[in-house]
Image (cartoon, rainbow, N blue to C red; front, side, top):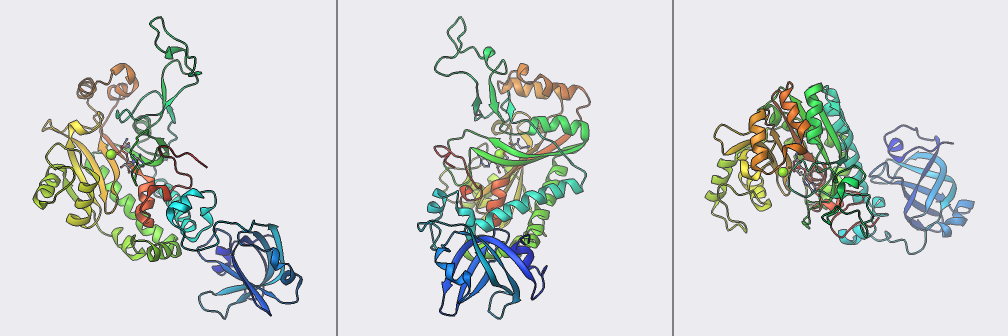
Length: 462
Ligand code: 4AD
Ligand code: MG
């Protein structure tokens, strides 16, 4: 008999009285004189299935070996359940221990701290909380593809190995094939990178954007969705060294088109995830401080706030709050400012546009005021920045000058400048930090709890 997933079973795919096989991990067991109850979960659903074993059967005799955490294969008959809180139960004919579990299985008790669960990242997926988080994460990934594919966007696979630091923030991890104890040297006793694998220094990419731009200027509407890497040493609840980013890039489009796309995209994700994961989101909002499913759905049905950077700074100054980082025009907004704007001023996600050019990347289009660029960030309550994007500088001369001003040698990105020479029309795009989206939707306060195996400074176990 082939196994049926608990999710399928609970959704009514099998009828009362049908013989079935379920396979999963034992969450708890209760043994009485006449009956035993085994609570099984197979990862497909927020809900467990209760399996009932009659006394006097072979299965009942072997219950001693059914330890919590063991992998079980259960054959039995599906019955509508008279019990509260569950619609179906399985009356066991046979309970086979596919793999036992040692007595010191760490997930026996409820109420472990998130910090402890991080130390058992290899097992935490079997807890209710992480079961919910990772199922939501999976559905959001799928919805991202659904949204863009249904609109005719092409998914482009941008490289992970690159020679450029797209954001120019100097946070790229270097990749080398040298024996670092003994690298080849130049005549001047410097490391001779020309002898390294790629004939020059190479990095892990910080963003797929620059390559996505080239593809957008051939295919119109594209997106990348993959891992990016940043060696930022900031030990915060919203930064990782390895994180996934979704980066759409659209041709014949300006900043406004870009912001509308982002709003529609995120609105779609909010509405659809509530429909896809109602049990997970209900569980999470009950146990964590995040949004309720209804609140998430509502957010997806209303326009986001909109404000320019200059107006936002005025709002922050007007607030008269004692911020840790003082506010004045020209500063990069800190998390506390971003949170204040979204939590207190707008009470919802807000799109902030037109930041000072000096705090933004070289590729953003210079506005006619010569002091701001056509940038946009989307800030959300509790997290702050979730999206960063911009209309790109399509004018060859202006881009060349910006690169000079920011000490980015043209020789490093000749192809990127080339794109401006050959049909380089108006175009725009943004990057959405996937982990921050999952944080926002699940209510997890730490980004380490939305990646199965997070990587951050001094942490690369598992
Ligand atoms: O604002 P960022 O740096 O923008 C870019 O990388 C652009 N190239 C995107 C584009 O226009 N195609 O990063 C985009 C988003 C941020 O808003 C944030 O949500 C997330 O990526 N992010 C991180 N998430 C987790 N850990 C980190 N270290 C992150 N750095 C950025
Ligand atoms: Mg940013």
